[in-house]
Image 1 (spheres, rainbow, N blue to C red):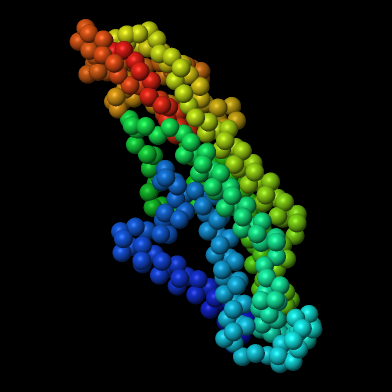
Image 2: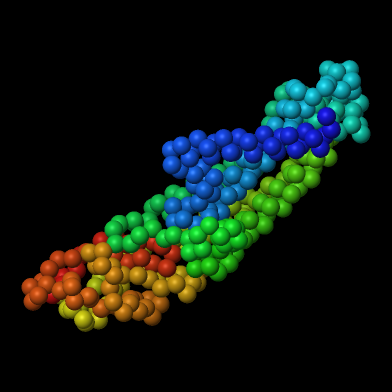
Length: 318
């Protein structure tokens, strides 16, 4: 078996495993391949995508080493020496032998600490990003946003480096670029085996992926701060009359400008003629929510342009 055959067989094994997991998920009327990269808003999650990418790349590399070391014919350059270093030297120019020496090295030495960083950074970024997103209020009155382009593959890929309004998000873009560069380096080095098993990742690349992950999480913490309504006036709010809403993080944020507009709902009913000047929001109470001359307590919520939803704010409607 050639080294190319081993790489292809390892790739096929990883794909087969994914298809098996997908088939099992389908029995429960779910899709593993969709949910593993999609966020709760229906968009492709940047952090989930790169967690999956690094998991599959490392699984593919380890599968190739396993196939070479345990299932392929053992080359003499490996079996002639029990020492990993001498086996790697003896197998120079023999890619299959070097893969087998790499498998021995992996069994004796284990995974480099660099891979704990490489696998841990995207996972940590994903957990942190999810925690920030879930810290937002998610009360009633708004449906979870759904990807506009549905299953369009190009749109799905674009969501990896795009903000919610479709514009390029520089934090997501940087995170994507440095991870892809590191992934290409990983693959190129692995298909040129040197007997050391998984390739050694340079500290510079690890540093770039770590810094970009920190920026990615920090950007989410800033641009997805929890919105809050602090006041509505005048009250009681009259039917067909414009009222003003003030609060925190209700409109645009300077660090992540967007053309999307905030949305206002009262008892789950969208308010009319919503406008913002970048600081406050004005809207009109729908006639169906008026109290018929008697003030009625209702609950107002605002969904900001970054999909953050405020806690309910009590308003008197008349």
